[in-house]
Length: 474
Image: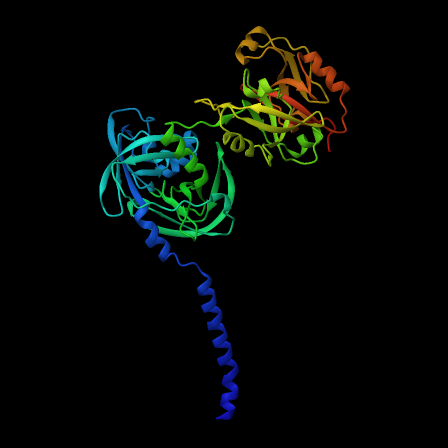
């Protein structure tokens, strides 16, 4: 008996230790039951009805899942068999989520959930259905504010999204595919995420399962506080693939307060076109790193022009906040009230300087970012391009007065390596204006070929910089 005890003792100890470890791990995993019981009453289902053009094909544009269309926006490819929304009007219904932020009936959701809705119905947790009025919406942040005629509604506790860190547990409550008050959980995958055509919102990326119908619903931290509004997902199928994105609640509440008090959203605007600072561009401008936003163009009569900002300036900070990359600047400036000053730290010609700009109000509509004339130069072996002066017709078509028009590009040349294309107009070379093709040729001959050179071009009406290396193999 004693021999058997000695034999079993180590195994018994190992089993007890393993069970203890498993129990400890189980205790460390989050329990969302209390959070859900407290928060669920403040989460609502939103049903909308709208009139749309019927599609003659079985898979028209309107039949694509809502959240799939939302991510691709206007870039969504036309599906064969779809007439592009032309035809007879038909009634279409869609579902989304939202949550109560004030007891007197104010509800927050996504702008795309209620876009073009003729009728909005809100179903509360107690099964009441109430018609809702759209107070206002802001497509840039994808936030909308609704109002229902009710009192003493259960509200959710608003948290601070600025305190979020990657790796934190979060949970979502919403109505995916119409299944009310579905709970999903995961972690914060990343913060301050930028999406295509979305430079203003610093999205929260999570791996929380989000599907059509979740849009507009709250994202909670473990304290039961709302830290975001579930807005969109990255998907190839129309369903969840592990990449979900939420609008930070700090952004959403700022928009909601403006919509409720003013009826519209005002945000600061400089009037500049910016681009990232690549490694080669950083070298060409004499920068130590790739931080900052490179100004490639300044709008006429804009706050930036009035303050003296110029193309080629690299904005390093705004109001004391470092501009890590070009996507950071719109967020920082957008939070400044129109009429207030923003203090910019700018690198120009290798020297840092401070420029104060009185920001304007962001315009309602903002853009995202003939017969050939005789050529005045042949292919340049250093650049591998053929350029010419602009004739009158080209100046009118391109809306530009001066520059060297790129006619041909040798795919093996330095210009092609820098990304210069036929049709581009070179307007500055190494920070010096280029008025003609001959001037560009002279500038290239005098250039230092041991470093990257900033070249400003105009392409399709947009201005941008490229870094040109004249010496191959560097």
